[in-house]
Amino acid sequence: MIIFISLFLLAIVLVINFFYIKRAKELEERNKKLEVLTAENAKVNQELQNTLSLLTSANQKLKDLDRLKDDFVSITSHELRTPMTAIRSYAWMALHKSDTPLSKNLEKYIIRILLSTERMINLVNDMLSISRIETNRIEINPESIDLISICKDIVDEVYYSKATDKNIKFVLLEQPIPKVLADPEKLREVLINIVGNALKFSHTGGKITIGFFTDGKVVETFVKDEGSGIGKEDLGRLFQKFGRLDNSYTATASSGGSGLGLYISKKLIELMHGRIWAGSGGEDKGATFTFSLPVAL
Ligand code: ADP
Image 1: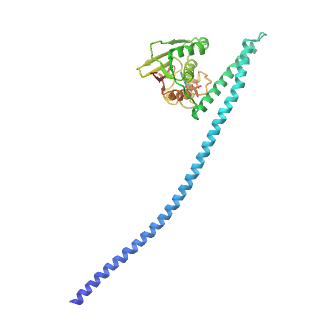
Image 2 (image 1 turned 90 degrees about the vertical axis):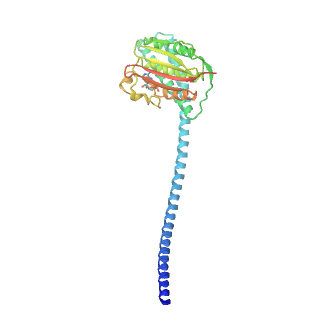
Image 3 (image 1 turned 60 degrees about the vertical axis):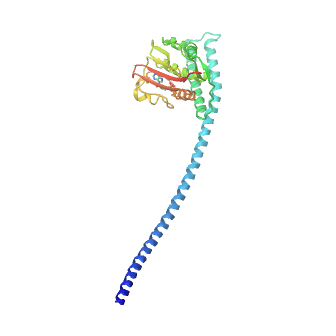
């Protein structure tokens, strides 16, 4: 009996031992696999670190290049503006202050020089504004502003002769509105662009209406024209950089613009804590551009 029990116990010990050795082997294999995986992990980690440092240095190089590009645009724009302003002044003097009568052809050529120079000056000014905006070098000096009087100034001083040339009627809806808080120069820039576009895309004999809404917290200014209009699919990209639409509606307007004006206007309005948006009924149904500005307390 004792022998039988001993044999039985021995068998149990052997079985336990067998499983123990098997388990130990499995654990050893698993450990080895883990070691391999850890080594592979370390390698991948190292590769990731290398890629990260490559990306960081590429990013830094791109930032440096971007700054160089901004400096280049800013310096060349400044340098171009001075001689172009001189060309414009001399062309104007040749046209209006010449001491000898101009032939019809010469007059036509000088008018072309004047118009082209004006376009170039506008483009250079747009590029300067963009470079200032994108490098955060634009300064906003907010003041309490009477929107109606600033709109009147722009219609009378800036666009009177162009509107007369195209026989376009301006209607300014003069209702009582509170003053707004904005930088007068930047607000002028925005209005010149929006009213200028309304004129550019209006048909001869059309009407441009400027009006206001207020809820006491903000004042919305809208500029509505009856011109070539904007397609629904294009409304979304109007305010992007170089957002000129070359569709059938606006192609007819031979606008000659840079596609930068609305992008700059949006940035300026946002810097003055406002919003800007556009609407249109579609082809030849006109367009309305509206921007909001906070009421001055
Ligand atoms: P641009 O210098 O070309 O006028 P903007 O950024 O001011 O540049 O305008 C971008 C584009 O938006 C214009 O080229 C034109 O296609 C469209 N647009 C702007 N205002 C009007 C408008 N009042 N009526 C129709 N299209 C307009």
